Image (cartoon, rainbow, N blue to C red; front, side):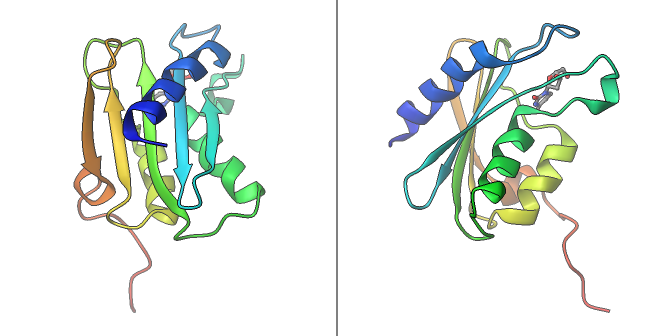
Length: 132
Ligand code: THU
């Protein structure tokens, strides 16, 4: 699957978002190194804090399916936004837990323009396991 196909998948996934409270639909298509694509959407809740972002839905699904740290290749994130939609800070921390520094993050906007950054660029000075 190439970059354009991954972005297109993320755009399609927005249709499955459950976002009745924000009306902000997000799709995340997570590409694993074995070529599998795992779907994620935001899933909101009337108790707003119980909401799960699209990126975390995809990452947690990958782990539930048996994938491990180091198996993660790229993620495309899509929303109906004018600007590129970046993962929120909680999702960035979750991506750092499982993705290598060169994991690719494909940011898109409502027009399907794409900006590619590495996880290291998206999260400089990330909190990881530190030696004591
Ligand atoms: N959201 C995501 O799914 N991913 C992000 O990176 C940003 C925010 C969702 C959470 C909530 O359902 C809605 O967008 C508005 O914040």
